[in-house]
Image (cartoon, rainbow, N blue to C red):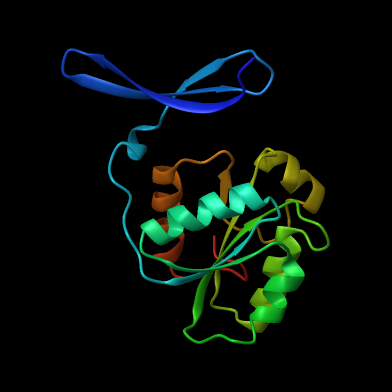
Length: 174
């Protein structure tokens, strides 16, 4: 039995359609990638703090971020991020954080960092549905931009630029 995610290119005349095939249980699901993922993702040079407790996901995400041109500091949990945040040179522009981590959740970490540096942008990720997380926290709370896992190289690149290029409009940049 195979598990995991694979991406295939299917061609029909001049049209090429990337499809994502994934299986965690031996049953395969096929989903077409969104059109915005077909374009090369925009590059960046900003400094990003990555908080991800899964070492494999953390390593893969660091590779993507560095390939996109970002300077990355990676951490396994929120406590490590907070300890390292005292060194804000060059300035950290964005926190990319998993929601579910040991200790602080990604949302709690974002709130603490925003209290120290209100201009920091936040991008929250999770394998759990965004609606489910919002239900736990409460819809009245300031909610950061969200990117569902698993995310692709392209979707992460586009979402990062979207979040970084928008002026903060709330206590946690939307």
